[in-house]
Length: 444
Image 1: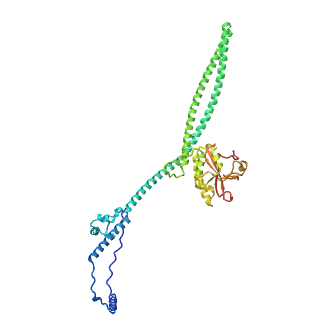
Image 2 (image 1 turned 90 degrees about the vertical axis):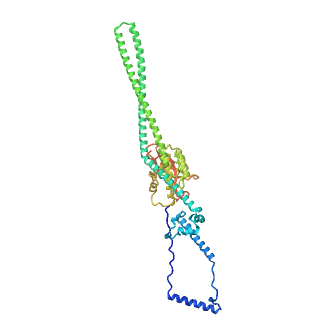
Image 3 (image 1 turned 60 degrees about the vertical axis):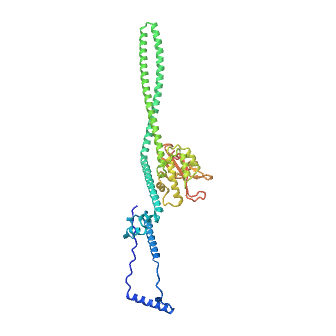
């Protein structure tokens, strides 16, 4: 802490010499007082002059000097936060001189001891304030590091999504190739079995011809046997070629199976990483321990419902969440938390903008304002729900899209009911009605 020298007020100046008029006025006032006393029988010149006590006066002056120096010490400490040293008392700044302190107390240290300034709470307060400031600085750096970490992970999300899409495409390609290879393998197997049966028939026929050739010396029978043997050799060669093709297909299937397993592990790792990022990004984490991402969509909805201050949840929201296979429950939790903030704004009154515009300010980008009336009528049971403790039917309208791709594992929806407060049974606010699978519509 920098030392600051307080400015001492200027000493009062001696009054100027009295004027002649002032002296004359004082003389007449004194004469009037003397005449009044003489009328009472009192004469001041007949009374003895009073005597003072020199010892008493000196002790009082010494006490006043001590009090003045004590006051200066405590005032200096209160202004600067530390006890003064001899060089701190500058008479030009209105402070007593070190020589005056020594003349009154005997020494500077003795003056500090008698003042009790070393036991004052100023030092303790300053030390605690500095320690608290240091802790706050360390905490601020820690929060900045966490914020930078979250920003870095947020910047990785597009690349992670791209890698997930690439891995998913490779997996689909591998599945297609595997299915084609299995179909080719089955066809070759059937062909091999047919050739084996044909070879067995030819061998049996060859054995019969050999027996006939041995019993007959007919030249034509010998030629037929030779032709049969050549045909059998060709069949055996075809079988060997078929077996080689089958082995090659088997090796290819094993490679495709290994690649598919690797793609499956990659997708699982990317899904876990996205779930952790979805749970952390946008929630300016102030806790030292990171939040554990939810494992299922139902867990995400239950956690959001427990934390919600403005958002309401229908029983159907939990039922549909339990049936959802969506792989990014962390994204569901983050969206519901942002939606709770939006519900708080909506409940206060007119926001001066549409719900979709306000939702974008809370990080909700895939906002759909309503459901087509024909869809709502065609699939009445899917788009209606009831609040807990009420049998009254309510309809969903606005909804939010989550994820990308195709299939319930990669995309999800959050369907809402928005009440403007005109219905006395449903106060103004936002109700989460359905969380999970895309509800049927005219395109499905």
